[in-house]
Image (cartoon, rainbow over the protein chains, first blue to last red):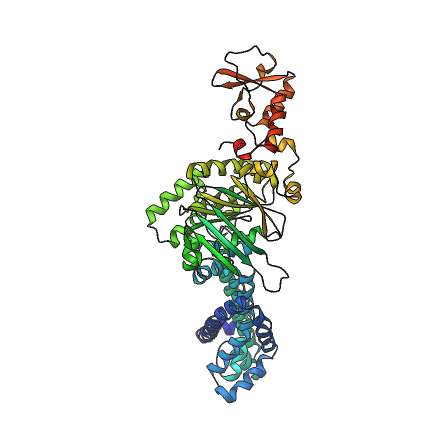
Length: 208
Length: 333
């Protein structure tokens, strides 16, 4: 604790790095997952193979994936972000697909029958109805990304993992505790914020 | 000009042994209330969905309002046709007002016009203005169906397609909504194509009934014709044509009267019952006659008694209806 209090500007910098890694990785992952999910929802035949591939990638240990990417991307920010994007893909894409395919067929039929074109249907009906599930996916992906991002320190990408690795290397439990507390705090705050967003997305009409 | 002209419409789904709709032709005039009736799988819903091109026909020609339906962009065609379905298909994330406004918004109406239209429609379907800001799940099934009806009527389409809209409602709510739908149709003169498998509902609502079996039209006629002169044993069994009470319910007191008395005759038994009028149906009359204990019931026009209706009149009416030209016996509506 005393380490944390004494070195808060340093810990704060690492926390911001960590946050930046997480946010930028999730932003890129979402940009990929959203159209992929929409495509998979409309093409059931692609669903199994693509989600299967994401599942396969998900099972690779994060440390080995990082190491594998070093020859391609060197050290630093990029291998870390690419790794995080790959891990977030499964949860994000799957929740977009589940959210879109879970909409009552009568609602889709009504939307078509009333003369919405497919873009209007997607933006005015399907995505708003899938939003709570998509945000649930984002929340889960955020928590796992915050966790996995600690490993990013291993490839010099910074973040709170730096404290953990330094602590282990220099046998300084204070550093490890400080790092762990900061990561946990970040995860708890992110979880609470995103939970609020989920509830906001279905305010009034949601079942839960 | 006929609002719907279908010529040899066929819908064959891939992988199905026989077409869901197997070459049907019919013509619907503006303002008609047509009920599509038949057992499940007979193709009635498929036929309905061919009309707003939710399904594209495998063969055949379809004119809507005199224009080839294939010549109109599909979204434009659908925006011009009201559509209401059983599970309502209301958008759960939109408030009632927004649900009703969907088609007017798609059509790009100005805001004040849309707001005024929502007010008007809520009143028409009997919902309070306070429901504007509710979400569909906060409404009962009957109220949701009213919103569904208002939504289908929103852009004032000449043609409405309704796919078992009251199918999931309890009997009392269903019968109330049927009455209100008839009222609305009389008021607005919409052409309505209404799918149901409920015979009572069909007889009650239809100007003409389109009876289907295995993708084909087996009979397309008025309810009374279908009851009294079913085209084959299938129709007879489907609508319960042998049921005399059902037939009586479609006949009017006025049509059964053979003679009119110029002055009031003394009646005592019927004094406590509501007075019988010319446009009451004979099923009601029979029930009153039986509970009156007498042999005849007075029929009133205004305050004046104009005739006596007897059991013999009704029996003669039933006998006539199965032999005479049916057009002479149609109920007035």
